[in-house]
Structures are given as C-alpha cells and as structure tokens.
Image: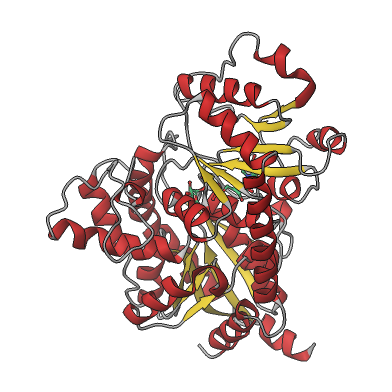
Length: 449
Ligand code: UDX
C-alpha cells in the first residue's frame, strides 16, 4: 500500500494517436500502469478526443491540433500523422511545461507515446523527460517496415499494391502482396514517415501489445537491431482491461439476438473503424452471407461504404431476416466472448486479431491496408486459425469460406488450434509467464528513470 502511494507521486503522460485502433491499446496501457500505482495523464488531440467521463482515475489534457474535419481513410492516414506531428508539438510542449510547474508533489517521470506521435519524443527530449514508445501493432509489421526501404534499394520498385505471391526474402511467410505498404497514398511520403517511426531516436524503451508466444522470432530479430529494452506485455486488453473509449456508440441490442443462437453458430462480421468498401463489395458480401445459410451479426458503420450510404441489395433483408442482426457499431470484445459466436470475418486490424484469438474464435481474413495483410498472413499461415479470402470479393467464395469455418471439418480443426493458442496466451499472462514478467520489468524500469 505504502509502495503504491510512493508510486502514485510518479506521473506518466500517455499520448495516444487519435484513431480507435490506437486509442484502445493506449487506454489499456494506462489502466495497467495505474493498477501498478502510477498517476496517469492522457494528453490527447481534440480531434477524436476520448471521453474523460469513462476514465475518472486519469487526468485528460487536450492539445490543440488544428486538424480540420479530415476524412479518415487509408490514403489520408500519412497526411493525418504528418499534420498532427507538425501542429501538436508546440501546444504539447506548453501543456507539459505547465504541468511540470503545477505538479510539485507529483513528478512527470516519463512520456509514453504511440509510435505515430513522434513529436512527443522531441518535446520530452527538450524538457529532459525520458520517453518510451508504445507500438500498438505487432512486431512482424515493424520487421516488414524496416525491410521496405532495403527492398527498394535492391531494385524492387513495384512494392505498393503488389499482387505478387512470391515470398519476400527473409520475411517468411510474408509474400510481396502482404507487405504493409498498400493503399497508403504516395510511397515517397510513406517512406518518409517510416524513416521516422522505425527509429527510436532518444526514447529509452519500446512497449509492445504483443507477446512472446505469438511473435517470439520477430521480437528476437528486432531486439538485435534496437538497442533499447523491449517490453512485450500483450494482450493489453486482457492484462488490465480499461473502460473502452468508443468513438462510436455501441448497439447492445445484439445480445438479446445472440442469446437465441446455438453455440459456435454465428459469424461476427466487422471491418474495424477505418476500412472502407465500395458498393460492389458490399453487394458481394451481402449475397455471400445470404448464400451461406448461417446466422450472422454484421457491423455496418455509417461510413463503411466510400462516398455513399451503405445500401443493401434488394431482397437481402427479407431473405436473411430470421438469421441476421445488423448494427452500426458493436461491443466487439463482449461479442467475441459470447458462446454463440463461432467465427469472425475481419479486416484483421491488430486489435481485432488479438481480441479474436484471445477468445479462441477462428477468423475469415479480408485485410485492406497497413499491418492488416501481415496479420492475415500470420493468422492463416503461422497460427493456422484463419481462412484467407481472395483480393476481389466474390459471393461464391465468401459463402464457401463461411460454411468451411462454421460447419465443416476445416473450421473445427481451426477452432482446436485457436483453443490451444488461447491457452498459450493465458500462460503468458499468468504469474511467471512472459507478459507478466515483462510487465514487472517495465514497472521497475519506469520507477528507475
Ligand atoms: C487501425 C488500423 O486500421 C489497424 O490496421 C491497426 O492494426 C490498428 O489501427 P482499426 O482498423 O480500427 O485500427 O482496427 P482494429 O485494430 O481491429 O481496432 C478496432 C477496435 O475497435 C477494436 O478494439 C474493436 O474491438 C473496436 N470495435 C470495432 C468495436 O468496439 N466495435 C465495432 O463495431 C468495431
């Protein structure tokens, strides 16, 4: 108790990147470190601000970001990161300087920032505060990021949106088409961003939302290249779950519907918070789901279809009424933990991937951009708990994949592997497990700064 009180005088400033898939792990980390006795301040942009009312234990510090109402879609993500890093530096420096003056009894011991919020490191360095990077996606994606400029130098020029099934030298089982570089706008701008985010600069350590049992070999290879300590403490949403900070409102009526479904019978379908489809893809999805004859819970975000509302094909609602539940945003983690859910058709964002394997739910993988193709390849070829869909949505292939994963032997075998993977993850989190030990070391490390 006394130790906790001494610790409480140590304040950590956490700086999330303002997208749902980045805010969630940062708030989970905040909750983990708060449970270890640190005081927490969340310094956040006004754009996509988290809701302080959901986190009464933390102090929230809004930073002026000057971000206009930008359309958050993959080709704009590099520009968004660049605008935030340019606009937030000065306001952040002022906020932290003021905080340091006010906080006489509480010392700001460290700034922990999302790898995309690198302005925070510049400010930390100017103010002589140690900083630590949080990598919200997996280790293999960073390995792949580091390989992209090398491949370019070696003469591989058409890396972006590559359709090649050839394996990338040194990155087995990734193929060129899996490299996390597709749909990210100009390659030159993306490479400039990579040069910054692959570098630790003056930061003292890297915290990872991953674990040894999933990515032992990628973590070991990266540790040879980075000369700062690594703390893989995932899955963070299970280590000390935070009250989620949703940018959209959950529709909880789906639980009443789920209660009526048989165990392992439902396909949960969601493409995260940013991925966008065109109308043709939505139509193919709708008919694929219809023709599978399986119950499904489908999240159709209001902005899921680029440039228009999501119009479902005529006849779809009548044909599927008995076995469909459609929502605009779902309490995903609770849905994945529900016994009726038998599989998850996902865009394979890293959070969705971790949330699914932590509940031993096998996946149908339809990745779109950035790390999603890496995650999908690992799900299907490394961990054996996923079925990959082709690049073009086709109703026949979709219906076949849904039936394979929910009804056929292939799906049963994947569920067995997913159960084994879940057990390994639970071992990592237990006293003596790799994530548990890493967290202990992280707390000691921060306390020693
Ligand atoms: C983004 C990138 O797209 C992704 O590739 C990267 O790995 C993380 O940042 P996003 O696309 O939103 O994230 O996907 P994901 O990582 O899966 O995060 C989505 C989060 O929103 C998850 O925590 C999920 O539980 C939550 N969610 C999603 C809901 O709570 N309800 C929904 O209906 C959909």
